[in-house]
Length: 137
Image 1 (cartoon, one colour):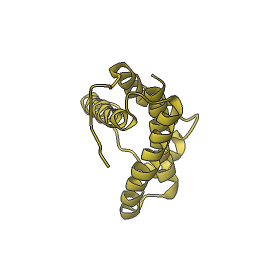
Image 2 (cartoon, one colour):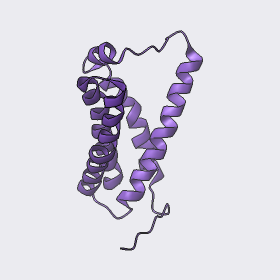
Image 3 (cartoon, one colour):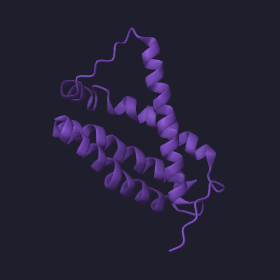
């Protein structure tokens, strides 16, 4: 098997859009309309809303981490892909690697299965949509 990693064919606009999507989807996903109440109950987040410096750090690093992840996804999908191929690869990567890795961490941390479904489920949906964007563009 011959594998070549190339950043040449990456559509940076699609990567940027998929990175921005993480914040839009995250706001919706963690809102009271969807999973916000259960997420707060099971996760007990201790983010102080008055600590703007910490929040800026959290959101800044989140953007960076999601950007790096989407660039990696774009490399896997390739530049001559289709919408369905991008969706499939995004789904497969998130389910096989992200969901399971978070799952192992949550087992050792004693987190609830419901919290795993909320947190890892976000990434399954997010990377599937990011793959769709990259594959379609």
